[in-house]
Image 1 (cartoon, helix red, strand yellow):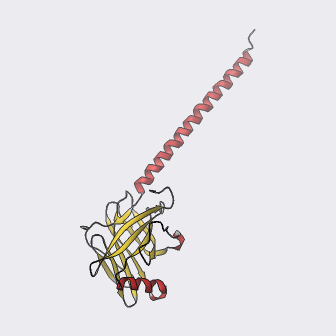
Image 2 (image 1 turned 60 degrees about the vertical axis):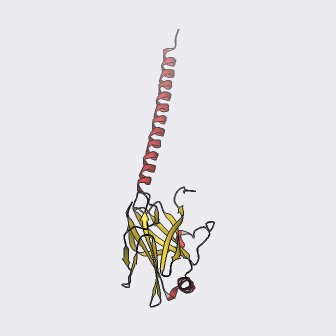
Image 3 (image 1 turned 180 degrees about the vertical axis):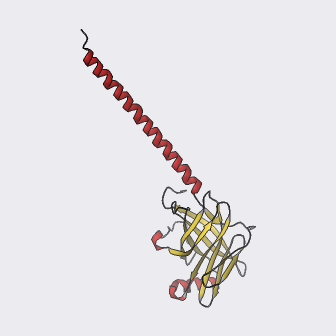
Length: 210
């Protein structure tokens, strides 16, 4: 004679196991969908800064001491006045999200591609918020003073001797995530112009392009 109590218990256990399996699959699917949505949102926010195009309009920006600099197209700015070295780069945001400039690190020469970037904590902080909208142009600014010692002297010599150097820019998306470092070579063009040209990008918070 069938033990209906046992059969009922086994059926209930089987049903519970099947329900648990379905729930587990649903949770995994939901987590996968959430992760895909998160990655899509990140890509919609990701900025990528490059040098401007030759036909981009003139960009201008003012320093805290009232000094103005101007750059057209893909130009860079290397100017000196009253012991202060003023630097600038015309930029274009090739990414899908707003770029927020966070800091910069200068190199006294055009560095090789196998030379890595400095830790983000060692970058000089921007003293003002500089935003570059996606698909639009903007401008980076930085200044070196006598108090910066040898670095100012070496870049002043590079300017007077018409030698190239480099600047690493640290920036993020509009919420401070997806930090990226892009390296720009600044090289002389003719007798009095300088050009900026991006060469390398590093993503600090996730996988990079290489």
